[in-house]
Structure formats: structure tokens, C-alpha cells
Amino acid sequence: MKTYPILRLVIPLATGVFFAEYFHELLSLTWVAYALFALFILLGGLLFLRKFECRWMFGFGVMFFMFLLGNFLFLQKWQQVKVEWPSEKMYYSGVVQETPVEKKRTMQCKVRLNERNVLLYVWKDSLSREIKMGDRLLFQAQIAPPTRTNLSGDFDYASYLLHQGISGTSFISSGRWTIAQEKPCLSLKQKALQIRNRIVNSYKEWGIGEEQLPVLAALTVGAKMELDAETRTAYSTAGIAHVLALSGLHIAIVWLLLDFLLRPLERTKGLRRLKWLLSTVLLWSFAFIAGLEASVVRAVIMCMLLELGKLMGSRVLSMNTLAIAAFFMLLYNPFYLFDVGFQLSFIAVASILLFYPVIYKRWRTKSWIAKWGWGTVSVSLAAQLGTAPLVMYYFSTFSVYFLLANLIVAIWVPLIIYVCALLALVAIFIKPFAWLVWILDKQVLVLNEVAEHVSRLPYATISWTEMSRWEVFLLYVLFALVLWHVKVRRHISLIVVLFGVVVLLLVRLLVVSGILT
Image (cartoon, rainbow, N blue to C red):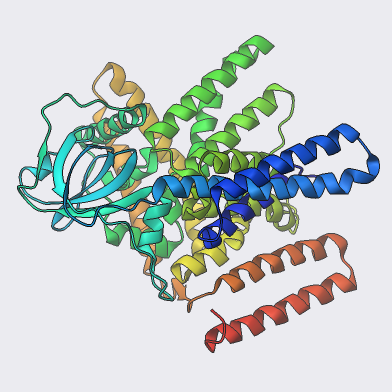
């Protein structure tokens, strides 16, 4: 842990947020704030004394301070989201925050009113289809807060909504709402989402096929609204569902493209600073267009730090870089910790950093093709190994042919993104070339067929009975013990690993028998 000082701050911060999630009813925001202030004064006094024998006290004090800070951030965010709405129908006025999503019988609208976000389900008709992002809705409704469910094995949709910053939901029938006759006032984020919609519409104008369009929109700008259940299932079964959600893979591809285009700016230190500034602005612009998803924000922060490291003469990607990204994201929004994308994204990168060197060293070769292939396999194995417990916990499945599918994705997805970027660049000046659009369309079609064929292979997935949080926690403890054993290579470490396996099997037995949940 001494090697990763930032990680020592992130772990108690995340623990504090997690603790407050389960005990927020027993905690007081005011008292936590007082405790934070008192501890801050105490730490300042210890720092002023500069006594060597007080170093452990100072270290534990800092960790406890971060734990309390996690409590404070969660409680503050919870206070903003949790609202007691009137029990009767009231008149409200709110602004539509995102493009409405068409459901079977309603139009789902995310609306901002009284500094709170609510989900309105407006009865679908010719009028509700005309609702646009930025419109001000005047409506009469009874808004209800999301209610929690504690049924084992059920997805807690109410908890999910609260963590997404949704304070209430309501159904609105026809005739109970209208659009105010005023010019929409769009925020910066809404303007970015508007640009994303225009990009997706430009794909339609190019002539991209109906089946390929939703996948291309998800791959390039993170627009996943039009993805159907069949496509999502095929990609998930094949073990490549991550390509449909913008993450580190997509940001890395864009970053490498920017690095290539801006390479002439590496001649002097002043130009290198300009390159870092341009890369940062362009990557954050891309993140805004993609909707500021947690995985995208994490990847952009890491790329920004890596570019800064290159500027200062360092090229090392480490756990500290990952920890810095997590630290600032949790400071900005502690609810990120409960986002599945955030969890999978950080666990995948951490797993690559920890397991990739161990796996890659198992086989040595001089052929650059074999090195590239083994490197890709090693990265995929490391990422899948780290995310497997979470995937089994949330989705109760495990993709068997993930290595095969990800090996194809590693080659194919960058080609799709680069061809799409080339088309977008050409479209600024002239009408896109028909042959280039045809290539892009066929590329996405091939990716869809790969996902479909792999998902139909025998035993493509292994279904897993419900996992408990205890099992997930013990699996990650076991991974840490295995890494420790690989490093020290002692009999005692092997005994500890085997003991961990026995404990995990015992817990699994208790979960299956219903004694432990």
C-alpha cells in the first residue's frame, strides 16, 4: 500500500460511502460535519507537532477523515435526492433534461423541477411524441418517491433510480399536460446531447442499415436508446457487451487517434503543453457528447493524467492513476460507487494492472504477431478474471467464449471507429463517399454477425445461481491472496490461499442452503 498512496485515501472514502448507504437513517449530516471539522483540527495539530512517534496516529486519522468524508458526501447527496412529495395531485412546471425514450405505451421523460429530477411517463399519442429535450412541461400529477424493495434476487429498480439522482416518478394521462410556449433553454450537457442526436441522425442520412445503426450509435457516441433486447442479449452472451457501452476501450481508441493527429506538436515543450491542452479539451468534449457516463469519465481522467505524465517525462499507468480518477469522481458524485458501469470499469482496469503482467509472463515469444495475440489474450483474461465475480453477481451468467469474441473485437472495433471518424471528417466538407459508407455499414454488420454466431455456440453461457455479496467479497480476497502467493512463493502463502478456498466453499454452501444471504 505504501507504493499507492492515493489508493490509501480512496479505499476509506469508498468504504465511508458504502457504509452511509446502509446506515444513512442512523447518521446525521450535521453531526458528521462536526466530526469532520474536529478531526481536521486534530490532524492539523498533529501535523504542526511533527513528532515521528505520532505518524501512525496521523495515518489512521487521515483514513478515518476520508471515511467520514465518504459519509458526509453520501448524506449530502441523499438529502438532495430524497424528497417527500405531496400525497395529492399538484400542478408542476419542469424542463425535459434528455431526449424522451419511447416505451410500449408511454413516453419516458426525465424532467427537472424544483432542483429535483423526476421520471414522467406520459401516455403515448401524437402530441407526446412531439416532446423534445429542453421543452418546459406544465402538468398535473401525483409524484411518488421510488420505493425500495428488499426481495432477494429481485432487481431493486427504486434503489437504482435514487442512485441515478431520480427523486420521483409519475404517470401522466392525456390532457393533463401541455408544452409551455417558450423557447427551450438548453444547458451545456443538453447541448452536448443534442449534438449526439445530430450525429446519430447523420448516420441515418449516410444510409447506415436499420440493424447496424443502433450498434454504430452505441459504439461511437454512446447512444443506446434504440438497441433492442435481442441485440443486447447476443452481445452479452458472446461476452462483448462492453463494446456497446462507451468505456476505456473506446476512449483509448480515440486517444490514440488524437495522439497520432497531434504528433507534430511534440517538437518543443511549449507545443507539447498545447497538445495536452487540445487532447484534454477534445476528450472531455467527447465525454460530454457521450452523456458523461461513469466509465467514460474514468477513462478520460486517466488519459488526461497519462498525457500529463508524458508531458512530465513519465509514461507509467499505475494504480495511483486509477485511484486519482476514482477519488475525484467520488468527490464529485458519491453515487457513482453504486453504478454498475463504474464498478466494472474500475475493476477491469485494476485487474489488468495486477493480473496482466503475471499472465503475460507465462509465455515468451519472439514473433511480434504472437506477442500481439498473446498480449490481447492476456489483457482479456485479466479483465474477465477481475470482473467475473461482479458479472455473476449482477447478471448470474458467465460467457464461455469471451476470449474468441474479444480477440475479434480488439481488431474490428478500432477499424469501425476510425472509418467512422474518417467519414465524419469528410462529411464536414463534402458529401460522404458512398463506398466508404458501404464499408462502415458492412463492418458493423460483421460485428453483429460475430456476436450472433458466438452467442449461438453450444454452452455459450454458464448460468449461475444467485451469488451473495459475501461470496463476491471473498472472491476478491482470494484473488488478492493468489497474487500475494505468486509474489512471495512460500508454503505459508499457499496454505492461506487453500484456506481461503475452503472458506469460500463453506460460504457458498451456506448461501445455497439459505442460511446466509
